[in-house]
Image (cartoon, rainbow, N blue to C red; front, top):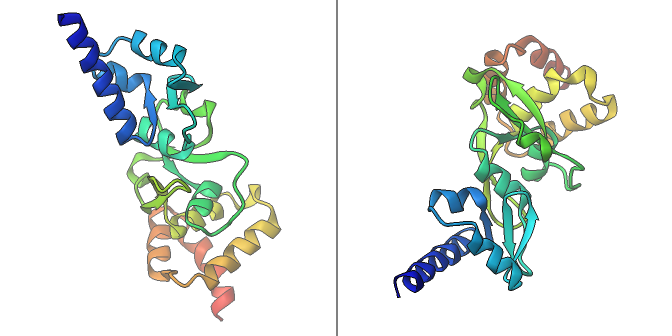
Length: 204
């Protein structure tokens, strides 16, 4: 009788987690709730769950929101560069690879399996931190357009000149642009002169 009650309790927690996370559950969540992994195995055998990738399981016929679950499983990552442009609706082309930024010294070994990882000093990691919704409606941490502009300016030599020009042009036309904020970010990120030189050309 006690075992049946325990089984019922475990399944109740699993289904609650699936409900709260839009049909996805992770092995990490199971450990946090002290639920033996055999319960996931049983649900997979029954066809209730599907193993999407290592440590991540989705309900049968469910959607896997990679941006959301990367963000949820790795609290220190912030979507940046092309991923930030996509999530902020600056570009409508789905990036071939996810871009994220973490602070220097962070162990990003697990993230590198799923994304291109950039590093920055810890004291500037949160500059430009914002939120955006994925195509599934889930909120994730992302850099705003001003921080993204700064990041691309820092990588200008590694960025295609045509893409860079289009990006700057897109910001000039951006209705919500905040040049004051852009210059503040640039100063803190040590690229104030570079930003000034680029945007003075457009506002002369």
